Length: 468
Image (cartoon, rainbow, N blue to C red; front, side, top):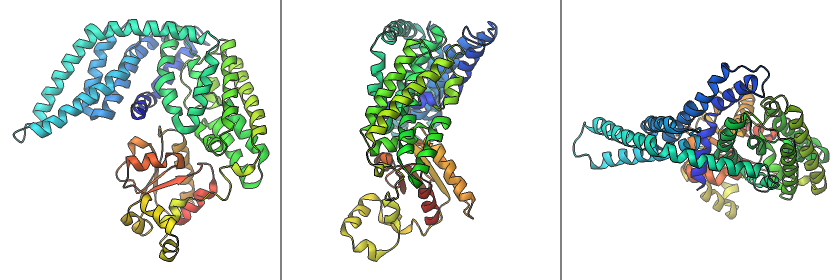
């Protein structure tokens, strides 16, 4: 189920640029905009109704079924958009992976069942075309109408929830899920598709505000900043800037994971923020990705900007107050010096130390293969990949920080970032947050993985550079 949710979120966040572009056009020239222009607004509806669904479906088809799956998914979705009276985004999120899966299975069947050699391309193209024709006709004749009715009813239910007293309780689900790195799944997999539907109707959506609100996380980081000293305080300060201005919310997750009671602060602060959003009937014209305060305010209609800032401030203030009370020990800071990267210690070629510690030796055996253990620091590292769930937030930040560190040395190492699903086979070293270690090892058991307790501790990067 989690794998499916990751695919759904990837379909949206890999096309986030078009969502923001259309949203900005609507913000500037729409009903809530600065310069209303009906002619320019003609760009918006075709983009929402045709371009975006096809791009989303293309992405889903490519993830599951490669380029052939992407092309067939695009054709089928085009037929869907012609018969649907509403944006076919939700339909595209179903059609894309489903079509990709069908094409993938067909390709596998062809490879196993084909009696001769040299006809693979011909037969696979013919079968893919047959599938494309059949699914396109079905989508055009039947699915488009069914989807339209379903989306209209869903929109009515959504409107009633948004206008009810239940909406602030969404923070009870959103905030705890964020800190275990389900933020992209929640935002891009569920809230954004529904928000796009609402924005198409109203010109803005409150759903774009729910997960992206930087206020609760800001309160937690400010409390750590106030209560810590020295290196810990510098780490909290850096995380605060990155979170609030850079929009990389993952940097505050380790602080909460070290002190789970702070989830209370996040939930209460999130509920307060949602209540203010709801009270003043505000929204964003597009999803805020990353969740920077600059983008957060910039995507708000001009009449909503002040109230959006007010909601963020109130949620941050409440979260800060509760966090200040709940943080009783500064040793819970993830940047404290006792944190050690155990896996890097395992790779050090010191047989006496390893053999003298049976427990450590058992951990080594369960962590990676003997060949990787013995050769990691003896072979040349050419490519390092930072990874996270989406491959666009904390991993991009971590890659940038390590890249700058390496530029100060003579190392000629390529440092890139990617999502867990897109780690290339040629990556020599994979770096992730320690919470994602098991997931990465499960997906790529033969890769050498280096987990970090936080992506904002400069000492961790210095240690890694020294090892390299």
